[in-house]
Length: 594
Image 1 (cartoon, rainbow, N blue to C red):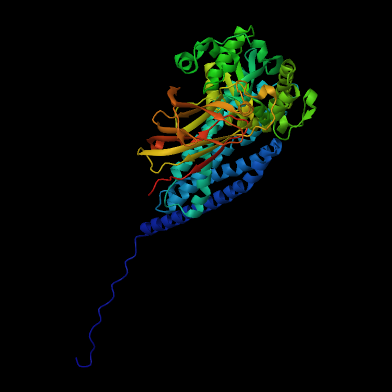
Image 2 (spheres, rainbow, N blue to C red):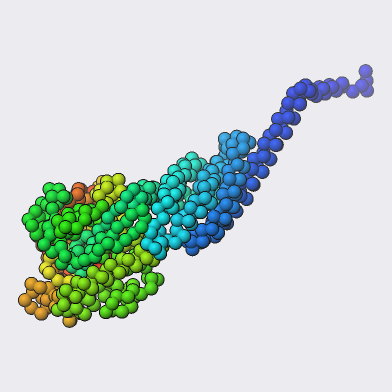
């Protein structure tokens, strides 16, 4: 036994998996590999397609802005095809299954959400651009002053369809939103989501308004529009005093200027002040003077002014208008746009559009000083000529942008006697109404001494931000500085007609009105640092604060309101007044000590 070595235990034999199991595992590996490859290929395909979409969008936007709709439709077809390809690539079952994986799934869901949103938005785009191109080929109104109502009718389903598609696209992006998504991917999708959020409101408004337009254009029968030309040189909360007018007929899209005139033609007529209800009569008077032509626009809302205007013109023997347009010389200039050729205004010759307000509200008083009848005739013909130029131009998209600017600045408002149309006009911001109370302050001026001196009134507004947020009580200051820049010499008709001194003749007197939400209270109102009495009322659900002040030439007058209320109800923006000079607004941070 000597010399013998210990026995070494034998290694156990490696157990091999049964063949069926090995086959199944191999198949599973192959399936997983194929799945991974399919997901990767789909992702690459989608990424490339979406990159092409993103690369084409700037060119498409440029083509649309320049109204090259035929080219835009071709570009849109390529964009739609790429977006559809990306959506198909991310809709296959391997890709969808991989979306349930940890972390990786968040990236895949984000990509598929972007692809789905792109497909939803671009699929009808080529056809939509062709429809828009046909509708705007000669402008909204042709050179023959006729609207292609059929084209407008074709636009309606395009707009409403896109409203619905934007809602779907927003939902797709929202469902794909995840904190785990890489910044490189979220950085591409988040701006798109924000743009769609911003687009949803205006598109919803357009979807409400556009279907109403064919009937407003006379597709169901002749419509009669009263165009009231206002004059903010004698300022009112709704633009200014009504000085001239035109009746316009719209039948089957064809627009005809029927009649023009001035306020002298309706001087003996009276509006029925009860058409605006008891509150309006209580605020602005139920006596006969409240219904004369000079007082149609003293309230806050253009729809009230329009109802009064319709009533007054009917009392004067004119036709019952289906709708009323209120526009002043500033609004006319905005409608025509700065690129419009000069207008031929008779004795004034060729007048650039930018000079239209000065010619109608200053130069006419100088040229026709002492000749009131001649001046009225000129204002009537000139206002009508300017308005007709808006129509003859073909109402390009530039003019539509001008209409938006004029409405936003308070120099244009439209009212319809039909409830559904008026509701759409309100939603579109074209109705010139305060609307439901919200964290906004609206300022208006009413010339209370007969003059045309408010042409030279220059308003500057300064709003202080609250120091707290939410429902906590806060105090803020709103300041309005009014400067009367009237020259040393003004025509007799422009002067303050009740003044007894030379300086007084160039001094305007205005009622300053402030509308704020009803939850906002007034601690104090002051003029040039001195507390002044105010009348505090309510109008259409808003709190209304009024005071009166003189505006001597060359001396800035500072009106200051100290407002108190819940921080989230205090004004964060200010609108008005509808003066010739654009109001300047600045906001400042809270000034209370920390």
